[in-house]
Length: 291
DNA sequence: CGAAAGACCTGTGCGC
DNA sequence: TGCGCACAGGTCTTTC
Image (cartoon, rainbow, N blue to C red):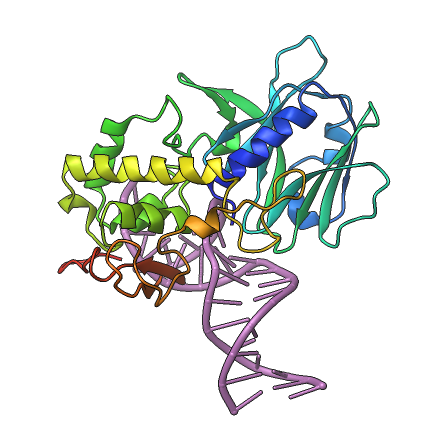
């Protein structure tokens, strides 16, 4: 499941493979992959030059120049959803089973393919919006910075977090508060900080929030160092390779296995139509927990 | 406005 | 063998 570290792995691959190249063609093979577009990628993309590859949280985008000299005013924004892949493929190779969009370049080098089994992901051509701290695609201007951006303000996050009337995990997954954290790294960060997922945000001290932020940054940094987390072939880098951080997960997906810290069997709770994994001893349930 | 629930998707694995 | 169902879960939309 691509969260911040996995998307960053993909961004790095794209920066290496597509920056500076001019798009020759775009072909859409599934309408759902481009559902948020007003125009047609096949007519909007050709002739534009990829300036770089950027990321905020789980979104990534390719700023596009109209010609090699002009500044980028638009971008091709991508969200991988649950199962999206951006792959660099030699032209002429057979189509992948769930190939949704194909983008070729005028140098006849490797083409960019968007492959997505569950079709939660999408590509979107959009304007870039200049903001005080950073230029970002217009459609994601409402998303909070991720904890690795200089635009991320720890003090402001702490303030806003504690004003919420909700549980800590729900807040961690709220991309308007902090972006990039998904179900896996939320559970891992909470375990490291010894916090139960239902802990009411208003009961957290500034020190505990700092500890949680440090844990989130640490676990995502470690995951990035191992190429991200893959449970199957659904998450791969631009070369189709899996990461191996799943071996290092302490609680996520480890129901009934011993907690790496105290040996207590890990529990699984139903949470927001998904799962939360935690250690019953290290992360005791709060009396006034919030979902 | 914030909080929470529902909708959107397909492949896999399980019980019967 | 085959069927139905639970599960995986990020984000946008809807509802209160």
